[in-house]
Length: 113
Image (cartoon, rainbow, N blue to C red):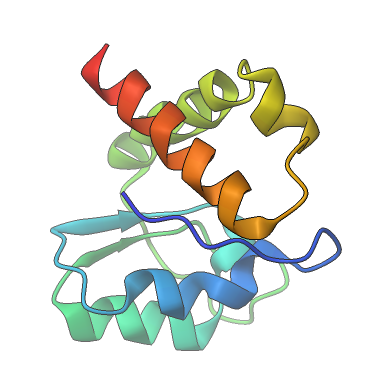
């Protein structure tokens, strides 16, 4: 599991390539926000299956595995469980280092549970 902390106003998809860097996967699941040609190409270069639904404004709609895409709910549930830790949800920590440290502790706790 890998986390990258960004500014509150920054979009998540700006860190997509950094999260995929040096990773091995059979498939990469993401929502429509990550449907960019450079992300799809990076996933393809990894040798993984792209399971990202195409945005409706694409000229050519790409096919994706709708059954496998339903597994993305596990990711969303993990983020929901992380937000049960009040310290994570409200970002009490003053420094990024202490926030990330507790985020990893919470993630390890959920993984071991």
